[in-house]
Length: 237
Length: 206
Image (cartoon, rainbow over all chains, first blue to last red; front, side):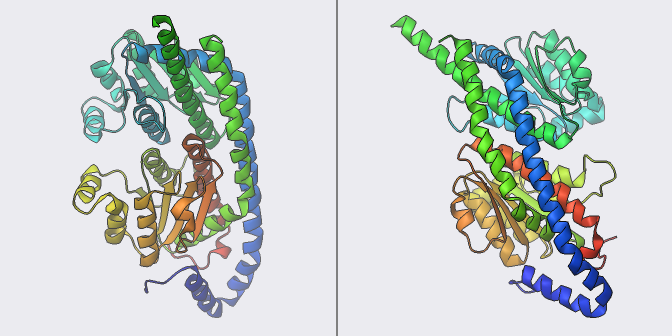
């Protein structure tokens, strides 16, 4: 195939197919417009749905987000670190949380680590002990009382996320959880200091709103740290 | 103002900053639909999806890959997708010897097939290695799709790329959130085309 092959030559290939399968082509041609219209409409609906979900969650949780961010800022001020964890798509969120705190677009870089990034550790624990302990064992190794455990689960029922919160709770860490639907097992977990539940039946919309929640928590933590620093500067002046 | 009331006020400001960019995605519905159709055609021809980005967007490239390979909706077929950000040996090796601009382009040149799709994410549209990856991909015959933000930067300005979707915000956190919704939609609506196989031509993959 030549280097310049593109969607135009794909159309030419389709023209060749037309000669071989005239009935299919005639039907396909008629359908493309209808399916594109269906897809276009669905895109607009999903965009509107997440805008509405984000608004309702942030409005409902505004007070607790501020409180949670102040608690996180207090831990960081005292030298604490943040550990983030989750499975599948939520593992990528855990990595985003860690890099947002550690290498922020603006503000103060803060110590944060994702427990999903080290393939050697994750596969060793899974193989030797079980997938249930991949995060809790790392919390056991790293976690100190002044630290923050930050776990994400769309269902609220991920066993290894719950085990990590229980370990973090035993260690006196601040525990922050993000869940979906109605919170699952995470909603019944005593070890959780803060739980933010995204009330949606769509895994996708839950993940999108969770992204906003942790971005907001990061931003508010930065605000709280800056406000505390300026208060301290005023006192010492 | 107390610490609590100051931080609480910032939550409202954070929400306000997200409203218009979120709504603007609906205005791009036609572009999103066209990208989905071209992607479905490529998968139908046996192509795979190759995703890449830097920093926070590197986590999105992993997210996109797992979305296609292991769908959250039971019964949807697994489609081949991979991220170019997983292998620190290759990423740091290429960065060290050829330069960071080549980390994605190198992997595309030696791993991609002409039927594949290259999806690059860059929150400000100015990631040199993402643009380089997309342009090399285009030269190899791949379909190119870019998710950008801000003013679209050099990626939106490149005449080589087939689909460029620009989130209407300069805040990297907000851009990322729009990107997550966009690739969730790309995944879901690619499957809508698979439900109408007549529009994709004769079956190529079984």
